[in-house]
Length: 539
Image (cartoon, rainbow, N blue to C red; front, side, top):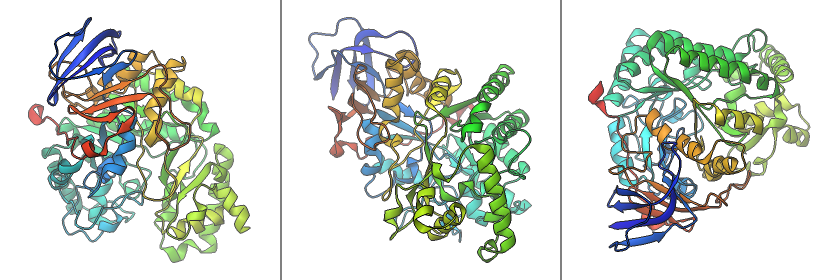
């Protein structure tokens, strides 16, 4: 199959200036990139791109769609991403992956941290290779997988708040090395989630050293993303907690030499916004010292998390019966009250996305609103919601930052773009799954981001380089034919509404047209993607 995308404005993903030209696709590859007039005698399908921009397919630097790739019907989980121009996703982030745990673990139900589940019946993927084989048959988008450290730890000891024993560390190492040897691009930590929040510094360092040995990349959901948090004791005072968390990961990179990607750099709560300057200065200085450190960001000012994410480790690790003791409630109330006051973030900034069957009426409501309806304190309401969801509820968290901070991060050299979104079967959907990348493009047009060529680079070539995705991210002869064609004059998202964006016209994945006129063709999507593998030749 040969296709000519003719007479468009070509942005090749490198950041260099756009030019008028055309692109020829042959099979799964780009055969030619033509600057100037296109061939007049082309034999194959011709798509007129006059007035449109031809770019590499967008690469989502932080996703969780590995949890849905091996489903019997993966299309609903991937369709919105394709319709916003995304062709490849880096998956296995925040310590969560649906693969890489000991066979026969009694803790299978806990894998996924409450945000995700191990999958449909029969989809028990202890090994990376087993998951890859199943996902390869179905995945609509290309996937670059990471091994979730939290998944390995859960498989070994569930959510126990304790260090791993020497024997358990050896078993952890075995699973991690197996995934890296089988093609995983690196690993991820989720230090605000169970059970990674219980991992010792020594555990994290030894895992980072293994990733570095394999020339992989380590992505990290840090211990704190706000100036005050329940991740530290006391949960307030002293150096802002998000800066402590940044210090911690930089120290880890110094000790191990690991290539580190700081996941979703955000500043939750108004008081945290004051730490933007110091955070960026720390990152710039660290990179100037020669360390391989970068980060990614949302275009939205909110994100999704598990309902327990704001609760302290000492509380979560207590037996349920003891959590309701007067002493535990008094301590929790004092910590939460002071943290809210200091942080400038409260229960009015937390929206319920899902609690469980029978509680659908709570979806879309803020915790403060539910408290008024129930005539309970906000904290008691929140604890009840945690209990009703069996600690597996989902929330939308607001005040991640404001639009001016988004603009500043976009323009900061070490930043890359991502969605950190997934499609839920029930409850409130995350608008980022539908419009995150069109918003980045719209911000460029409006002068609130980077020039269009640099914006496209941060969602294509720069991501491919960062994660060593060979043959992806560029419009070059021999590269995979992952291509997004969009209207730079009209591309836009729809605010917080989870609906299809405007201005994304055509999307090709490995040479297959999966979006035309902005609409995904479900008949062509299944299996159009592939599971990418890390090149192990340099290990």
